[in-house]
Length: 543
Image (cartoon, rainbow, N blue to C red; front, side, top):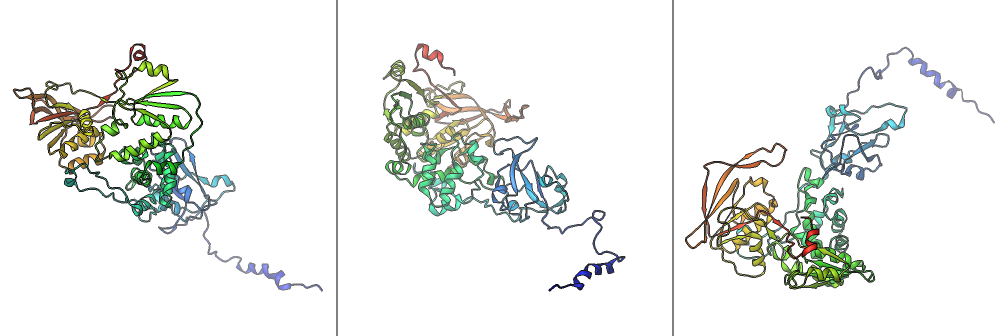
């Protein structure tokens, strides 16, 4: 049976009744459509503020954002060189990408109309393909960021309580603190690029955040056999480029590494967790001069690969500067001993109290091994080069720290001056404070120019160390017995560097000052000591 729908057939003709009437729609594009001030339209990105972290791409649920290289943008420390490209055909303008942008460079605009029959034209690099968007911002992360820019504070001993002993100043995160701090990481990986060891930083931080401390330890040991050392005294260049630090506090990468490694209480536990894969002996022998961080690290990885490794160490203990240079309030001996014991467990042999050039010749080591690695560090201090520097009571800070860590008694009196602005200068000053001395640091540039870690500088000031900036020593004054009694110095003015470097200190004529002291410590830098090399070996070394 057929059915004819007359009404349905005539329905389209009813539209003719609108013919001739004034339309209610706007004649696009002759009349612009102004959106509300908070309308979420197309993206805009401040290209120079963006660091290419990719957090926007990671969070996008529609896979509408990818990271690409664009002309005129080069990668550098803390900037991948990539910039986000948005597929406007896939985007739903939820603005999650804006809310997780750590720098705040990414925004939405009030622009929302675009018509084209070319699907590829819907792929935009915000800020480059729509530069006019800068004047139409509607939604930013200024007040709605989903990132946590505040670091979990690290518990520490109080300033003046510290100088009463060599107890460790930094107390470490507990489990709750570590989980909370680790959750701040956005896993961008910019930190990994600047880490000298290229550690898997986002991976072990994510493991901590997830409560998998053992996994964190395994990940850390994958390319660092001395992580507890780094977790306590590393200069953390990684934190300098942390994406979160662009608007807040960097993720405490160093302290999280420390937390993870301290969960493995002993070398045996560390070995059980890491379960290192040691290859069968390959028949090759390697001799290593020096059991400092570089020597120990080389020995560890060579031993894992089946090499027969022997280290020759001049001192009674391994660790180099970390054992005999860094004060124990920063790096307790127990932490170092645990890591060295772990390295010895995989088969590395260490000959202690064996000074190359004295107890054994370099020639003998060279002939008994297939390869020799020299990890002698920089034990030899640079001298100040001023009159009276050789007086009694004048010493090098690095030597002072060595003697203190070796439990030797050192007479410094009650008024000490330290010359320099690096970590060695700060360490020597803080150690002298722990022996009751009034300590003054003389530094030729400004405090903000000091190469020491900022937290070490603050720690020294908290402990009562006086810092005199823009002070250039010119003469050591002695008493009748030839002992240090004062240091004379000139004040300096800072002159801009034409090449864009740090301002240069220039002595001010007639600004002489004299500081009475009982001991002087130089700490202006160090260099390698290759005096153990003989003849042809010495000629091959380029310094």
